[in-house]
Image (cartoon, rainbow, N blue to C red; front, top):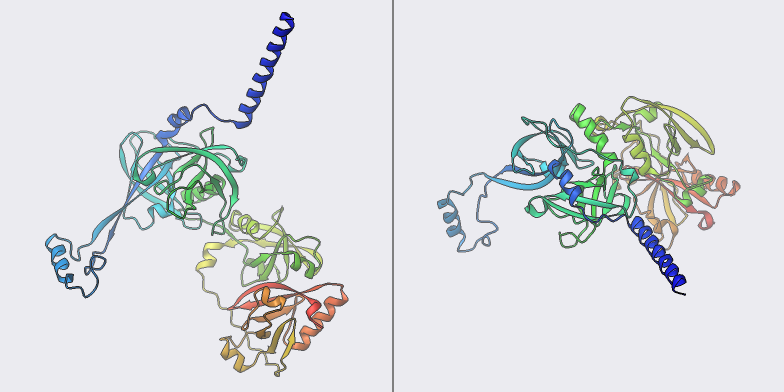
Length: 480
């Protein structure tokens, strides 16, 4: 029995050791972050910016306007040399060195508007930096310092390899307290906040004011994100921080280094997501792709793209939604000829588009004036929960429309209708129905009949509000 007991105890011990090893491997938790922090801390920097601001012209903010103490405080400030004299304002942030010759990455908002930028290294030494270039769209800035010796630096990793649950470490200058380390995990991936090119890693590693522009490291000491923002009702960390993914940052940094600015591809279309009801109204098999709502002058128009086309494939890559297409186009080099596959009225077509540059398009003024069309005689009707009227001179003036505007004006919306639920309002202009132009109530009736004959349960409308187009699918049950 003693021998059997010894064997049983040994077997149990081995089993427990195996479970411990498996659990440890599953957690991937390091015993300490000290070695990693020591290895990479020399490449992390504190950033101090200095900006001249105008002096106050009065005692505003100190006493109420008209207060009997107003003159007293003005004289007090003048005696102390303040008055209207410009003064220097400072701000703090973080960054990291990416090359031994002194290139440094940080957030654009850290250095935006600064007259002077000072870099403090982990050793305590300081150097002045110049701004190489900035990209407000991704909130990334590239700086450069001149050092007598090669600088310690860190490398970017592949942010696409980061998985939810992986350990990460943030470094920076939180609340101006100096070099600091915090650790956590990847809480979520591919977060979008407000920008067209957003691809944030969400983490619960503590990120506070002053951490902006600092690096988010994986356990190999590679930068997989640039700490940019937090979600907090108090202004302090509550465990919801966001770092711009390194695969976005790398492309921006390479362009800033080469050109001093970003150069993103531009297709030249307005787009919206394909929802389930829009897909049904268009007879599409699946709700995917990017629906083109407008094609102004530009590369897409030159290639023959039309409003109502659904972009399914761009440069050999499937298009899932509008956000994905914007990123795909923006990451493609300017001037490249790409193949774009679209669904047009149930059939696929391939267009060859030579991309322009988005930054040029955004700064250019476009002239969209067209020859006015003859007005249709007034013939209002109630269809699909909408009160509709052909455009008249009075309606154009009432809703501030140009003479070139064409379509059916929405003059009222039944608040119990699907149209109201989907956001249509008086003042909207319906320019297309069933991907065909509508100028009269009779045109709309014809499109409804065609949709029913095709066995569709809804009709796709192209609606413009203040010039901005969007597609809306309305069920045909109300069109009796």
